[in-house]
Length: 82
Image 1 (tube, one colour):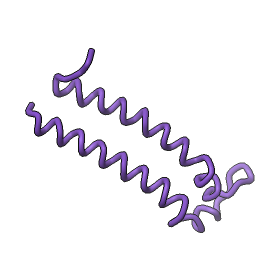
Image 2 (cartoon, rainbow, N blue to C red):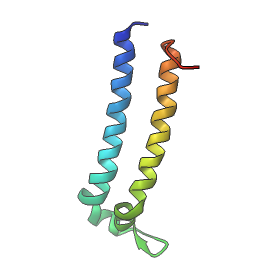
Image 3 (tube, one colour):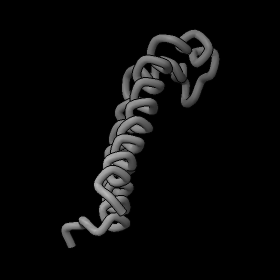
């Protein structure tokens, strides 16, 4: 595999992570706030929950997802650190 395909895989992964990040931070916190606030979980409106702490959980999960996928991409292209 070439450096070009490695770079394309890397950029594709970054693009997916950025789309998820944007959807959670801006989408759930601003754009879909009214729709999400119609749903209550544990006495809290879902839009409020996403704005205050839910997005942080998603961001932490996104960090682990990125690290795992990047390790797999590195291994697939023979540039892993192991």
